[in-house]
Length: 167
Image (cartoon, rainbow, N blue to C red; front, top):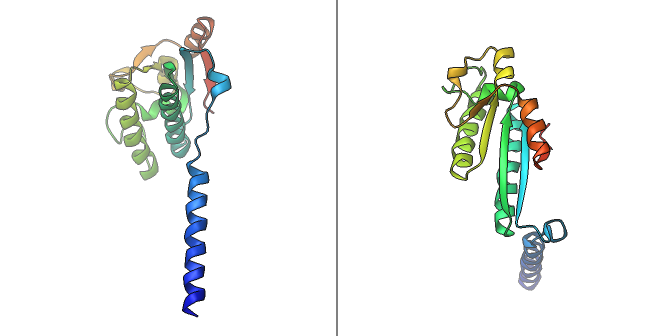
Protein backbone atom coordinates (compact mmCIF):
# COMPACT_ATOMS: atom_id res chain seq x y z
CA UNK A 1 0.00 0.00 0.00
CA UNK A 2 2.79 2.45 0.93
CA UNK A 3 4.57 1.56 -2.31
CA UNK A 4 1.42 2.41 -4.33
CA UNK A 5 1.02 5.76 -2.58
CA UNK A 6 4.70 6.57 -3.12
CA UNK A 7 4.41 5.59 -6.79
CA UNK A 8 1.24 7.67 -7.19
CA UNK A 9 2.87 10.70 -5.57
CA UNK A 10 5.98 10.24 -7.74
CA UNK A 11 3.90 10.09 -10.92
CA UNK A 12 1.94 13.16 -9.80
CA UNK A 13 5.14 15.12 -9.20
CA UNK A 14 6.46 14.14 -12.65
CA UNK A 15 3.20 15.18 -14.31
CA UNK A 16 3.30 18.54 -12.55
CA UNK A 17 6.97 19.00 -13.45
CA UNK A 18 6.50 18.27 -17.14
CA UNK A 19 3.27 20.27 -17.41
CA UNK A 20 5.13 23.16 -15.76
CA UNK A 21 7.81 22.89 -18.44
CA UNK A 22 5.18 23.00 -21.15
CA UNK A 23 3.60 26.09 -19.61
CA UNK A 24 7.00 27.73 -19.28
CA UNK A 25 7.65 27.32 -23.00
CA UNK A 26 8.42 30.70 -24.44
CA UNK A 27 6.46 31.67 -27.51
CA UNK A 28 7.93 34.30 -29.80
CA UNK A 29 6.86 36.56 -32.63
CA UNK A 30 10.06 35.99 -34.59
CA UNK A 31 8.54 36.12 -38.07
CA UNK A 32 6.48 39.24 -37.37
CA UNK A 33 9.38 41.14 -35.78
CA UNK A 34 12.12 39.96 -38.15
CA UNK A 35 14.14 42.93 -39.40
CA UNK A 36 12.40 45.47 -37.18
CA UNK A 37 14.23 47.78 -34.81
CA UNK A 38 11.17 49.88 -33.90
CA UNK A 39 7.39 49.78 -34.21
CA UNK A 40 4.75 52.49 -33.92
CA UNK A 41 1.25 51.85 -32.62
CA UNK A 42 -1.77 53.94 -31.65
CA UNK A 43 -4.11 52.30 -29.13
CA UNK A 44 -7.73 53.45 -29.22
CA UNK A 45 -8.97 53.01 -25.65
CA UNK A 46 -12.67 53.77 -25.42
CA UNK A 47 -14.41 51.26 -23.16
CA UNK A 48 -16.09 52.22 -19.90
CA UNK A 49 -16.48 48.64 -18.70
CA UNK A 50 -14.07 48.34 -15.76
CA UNK A 51 -12.86 44.78 -16.38
CA UNK A 52 -12.37 45.40 -20.11
CA UNK A 53 -10.58 48.68 -19.52
CA UNK A 54 -8.13 47.14 -17.04
CA UNK A 55 -7.44 44.21 -19.37
CA UNK A 56 -6.85 46.52 -22.35
CA UNK A 57 -4.24 48.49 -20.39
CA UNK A 58 -2.65 45.22 -19.28
CA UNK A 59 -2.44 44.12 -22.94
CA UNK A 60 -0.78 47.41 -23.89
CA UNK A 61 1.74 46.98 -21.08
CA UNK A 62 2.48 43.34 -21.98
CA UNK A 63 2.91 44.27 -25.65
CA UNK A 64 5.36 47.02 -24.69
CA UNK A 65 7.36 44.64 -22.45
CA UNK A 66 7.46 41.85 -25.04
CA UNK A 67 8.63 44.19 -27.78
CA UNK A 68 11.42 45.52 -25.59
CA UNK A 69 12.42 41.95 -24.66
CA UNK A 70 12.53 41.13 -28.37
CA UNK A 71 14.92 44.01 -29.02
CA UNK A 72 12.30 46.14 -30.77
CA UNK A 73 11.71 49.73 -29.63
CA UNK A 74 7.98 50.41 -29.14
CA UNK A 75 6.67 53.87 -29.89
CA UNK A 76 3.20 53.79 -28.38
CA UNK A 77 0.46 56.36 -28.21
CA UNK A 78 -2.61 55.62 -26.12
CA UNK A 79 -5.69 57.64 -26.99
CA UNK A 80 -8.47 57.77 -24.41
CA UNK A 81 -11.94 58.65 -25.60
CA UNK A 82 -15.59 57.82 -25.08
CA UNK A 83 -16.51 56.20 -21.73
CA UNK A 84 -12.83 55.48 -20.92
CA UNK A 85 -12.53 59.24 -20.33
CA UNK A 86 -14.31 58.86 -16.99
CA UNK A 87 -11.43 56.76 -15.66
CA UNK A 88 -8.58 59.17 -16.47
CA UNK A 89 -9.75 62.08 -14.34
CA UNK A 90 -8.38 63.26 -11.02
CA UNK A 91 -10.09 62.12 -7.85
CA UNK A 92 -10.79 58.46 -7.21
CA UNK A 93 -14.57 58.82 -7.15
CA UNK A 94 -15.14 61.63 -9.65
CA UNK A 95 -17.09 60.59 -12.78
CA UNK A 96 -17.38 56.95 -11.63
CA UNK A 97 -20.00 55.62 -9.28
CA UNK A 98 -19.97 51.99 -8.16
CA UNK A 99 -17.26 50.09 -6.30
CA UNK A 100 -16.02 48.25 -9.43
CA UNK A 101 -15.62 51.53 -11.31
CA UNK A 102 -13.82 53.20 -8.40
CA UNK A 103 -11.42 50.25 -8.04
CA UNK A 104 -10.82 50.20 -11.80
CA UNK A 105 -10.12 53.93 -11.83
CA UNK A 106 -7.44 53.51 -9.16
CA UNK A 107 -5.81 50.75 -11.24
CA UNK A 108 -6.03 52.88 -14.40
CA UNK A 109 -4.20 55.67 -12.56
CA UNK A 110 -1.40 53.19 -11.76
CA UNK A 111 -1.17 52.21 -15.44
CA UNK A 112 -1.05 55.88 -16.46
CA UNK A 113 1.93 56.53 -14.17
CA UNK A 114 3.74 53.43 -15.44
CA UNK A 115 3.06 54.33 -19.08
CA UNK A 116 4.40 57.84 -18.48
CA UNK A 117 7.63 56.40 -17.01
CA UNK A 118 7.99 54.21 -20.09
CA UNK A 119 7.68 57.17 -22.43
CA UNK A 120 4.27 56.20 -23.77
CA UNK A 121 2.39 59.23 -25.04
CA UNK A 122 -1.20 59.46 -23.81
CA UNK A 123 -3.90 61.68 -25.26
CA UNK A 124 -7.41 62.56 -24.13
CA UNK A 125 -10.12 63.37 -26.67
CA UNK A 126 -11.77 66.65 -25.67
CA UNK A 127 -14.77 65.93 -27.89
CA UNK A 128 -15.48 62.99 -25.54
CA UNK A 129 -14.94 65.28 -22.56
CA UNK A 130 -17.65 67.56 -23.92
CA UNK A 131 -20.06 64.71 -24.60
CA UNK A 132 -19.48 63.12 -21.16
CA UNK A 133 -19.58 66.53 -19.47
CA UNK A 134 -16.10 66.25 -17.99
CA UNK A 135 -14.35 69.45 -16.99
CA UNK A 136 -11.09 69.60 -18.99
CA UNK A 137 -9.22 70.60 -15.80
CA UNK A 138 -10.21 67.29 -14.21
CA UNK A 139 -8.06 65.11 -16.48
CA UNK A 140 -4.82 63.66 -15.19
CA UNK A 141 -1.81 65.84 -16.06
CA UNK A 142 -0.03 62.90 -17.75
CA UNK A 143 -2.55 63.08 -20.62
CA UNK A 144 -2.28 65.53 -23.47
CA UNK A 145 -5.66 66.97 -24.43
CA UNK A 146 -6.50 66.86 -28.16
CA UNK A 147 -9.52 68.34 -29.92
CA UNK A 148 -10.68 65.11 -31.50
CA UNK A 149 -9.37 61.57 -30.96
CA UNK A 150 -10.46 60.53 -34.46
CA UNK A 151 -8.34 63.28 -35.99
CA UNK A 152 -5.38 62.01 -33.95
CA UNK A 153 -6.00 58.45 -35.19
CA UNK A 154 -6.06 59.65 -38.78
CA UNK A 155 -2.89 61.68 -38.33
CA UNK A 156 -0.95 58.91 -36.61
CA UNK A 157 -2.06 56.30 -39.15
CA UNK A 158 -0.87 58.58 -41.92
CA UNK A 159 2.48 58.84 -40.10
CA UNK A 160 2.83 55.05 -40.11
CA UNK A 161 1.39 54.12 -36.71
CA UNK A 162 -0.62 50.92 -36.67
CA UNK A 163 -4.07 51.56 -35.23
CA UNK A 164 -4.93 49.05 -32.54
CA UNK A 165 -8.66 48.95 -31.88
CA UNK A 166 -9.21 48.28 -28.19
CA UNK A 167 -12.94 47.41 -28.23
